[in-house]
Length: 84
Image (cartoon, helix red, strand yellow):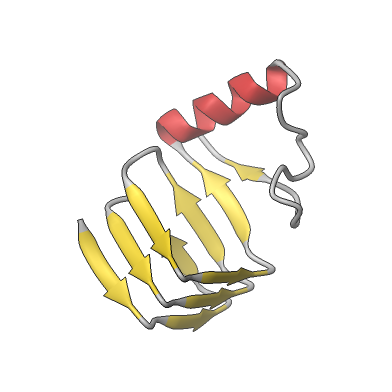
């Protein structure tokens, strides 16, 4: 897994899979997750949106269908984005 330290990004797109983020700050970023391994250590996410792809997208659909998460944002942030 690739380690990324002290990255600061505003308004960008960050792919989470295969990465370990340490002491990073992401503001108003699009966080893309496909279901692979990742880690966040002392990393601050401010007003970010998640986009789920592939297996992660299918898992989100299942959880929404079961009522386990709400379609308007299970993370307390903006609307949950999903793509196939």
